[in-house]
Image (cartoon, rainbow, N blue to C red; front, side):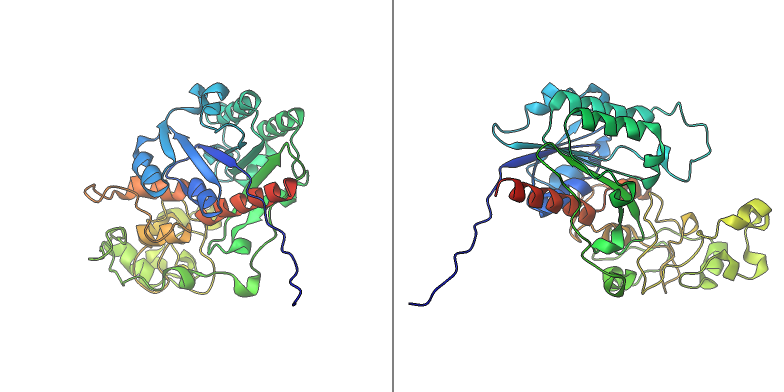
Length: 363
């Protein structure tokens, strides 16, 4: 009789997550893709409800400000006996490098991370994950958040550098650095190791090359989300003189904007440029659909990238629907949903980190 080694059965650990500051559902979708059940999302923006619920069933969208959410209210979402997971990404503009140096101490968004801390105290979740811009670690409000986690008995990585994720290292075609904190009461936890190296990073080409060609201001006949903004005659001339990976410094002098002729404008090279086919894209912002808002020019078509291309670079599934089929696709609202989202793949990395952690704890 041939000997067959016994394989260890990986335990199924009942666990459920709630997502505060959920937006259109990027983080929730990633958790679901990793096999983590998500029961509810909370956000104050009603325009996100359709996208969140349509793409992430059975998770339910709750239009409610975090300041009005109690731990007891959230606790009702978790089935008895399940590991309680609380995740969220507080709005990050306050902490971004683009606003550093501004007088933003009175920005109401400063309170949101403190509200996250309050909910942690009240809910007593087993696992917490928080995603934000790396610059948040420079502020006292983040240290306050870590102090709450320590007082509540959470384990997390004490090295600030270890909490910074470079998205291409995990299969995202976007040069995005994010602060990802994962903490657990159950034992030590750390983000899963990188899945990619520089030689096999995903690139702009690998993500968007297959989409139909468009002219500036055009829309695909078969894909309503594949639409791009119009360009003025001046900006059409500018993009025709733009090189992949280049800047406005590639233009002839008569096309250079007045603001860039000034001494103060010479330090902003990362605007008015094309993406490079064979590199990850720049960080996708809420205004990625505008040629002048960053290096968001298409690599070889004379236009800014489309809404669908921005969503794909944020690792949303190709069939992710942001509005009802009968609703108008507005650049500003869809751009905000896409640019503000946690990249779906990054949410999946968080989900796999949690799932691996639970399997080890309950093995």
